Image 1 (cartoon, rainbow, N blue to C red):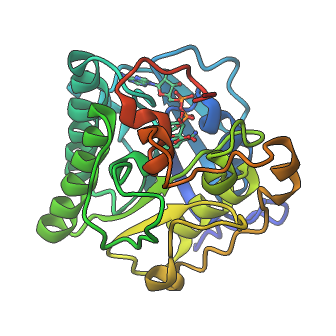
Image 2 (cartoon, rainbow, N blue to C red; image 1 turned 180 degrees about the vertical axis):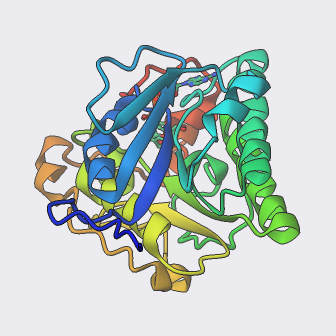
Length: 283
Ligand code: NAI
Ligand code: 15L
């Protein structure tokens, strides 16, 4: 006798069976967790830091991305990955080496071994931070990292290119500007990416068919633009927010190429100075 597996009251399946979110305890990871609940039946959240109480649809694992075996185990049953985990400002090389270099390698290698086909990778504007503020860049602009942190993001972009060309794993490299609740300084009037636009950028990165390997800039629809996403318009990323409502807070202090201060002349802002930075880049 044939058996039917259909249950009349079963909830419709979501687009993904299981998504993996690294960096889930961080600033952007916390923003994304709610949205991912809509996109996947199960969200595996991971971080080196405490993840709090998992929601009913979440599986939580505290893991150091530098731990290759642990990262391999994270990948079991995963359809796609949002990779936010790692050190998110400049830091000593040995720290970046584990979290950002080895960690990203471990993630891609585990993805390859488990047949994962799509990764949304949190790259950074600090991949191109030594371009002057007078330039408008697209994804083909030469990398000009402003810090060792930026260099680790260049590594992630190159590694993901290799994993696409060699193994067919698709990656959207999201060169995020400044994604916080609000812009915190004049530079962020240009680099601001609202949380809502960030979530939309991740959505486009996960749901667009056949992305291959691409670089997209993550900024809201701000009045001044340094970055041009025309070449990747097929992603459908169309930011809805803007830094304009915050402009009055920073009168006459917009980044200015004529100033002596390198933090004013280059897109990376204070990162180019090689000085210790506060977490939220408040200079
Ligand atoms: P965050 O620093 O708040 O979050 C990063 C998370 O990664 C933290 O929870 C941290 O515990 C975790 N992490 C660090 N080392 C780890 C390791 N070895 N193993 C496992 N987890 C580790 O940063 P945020 O703002 O949430 O950014 C998320 C990602 O987006 C980062 O990769 C960052 O570089 C990138 N990004 C963020 C921007 C922003 O404006 N928020 C701008 C450009 C890039
Ligand atoms: C980044 O890459 C950092 O992760 C974030 O903390 C901000 O400093 C941002 O860049 C920025 O450029 O404002």
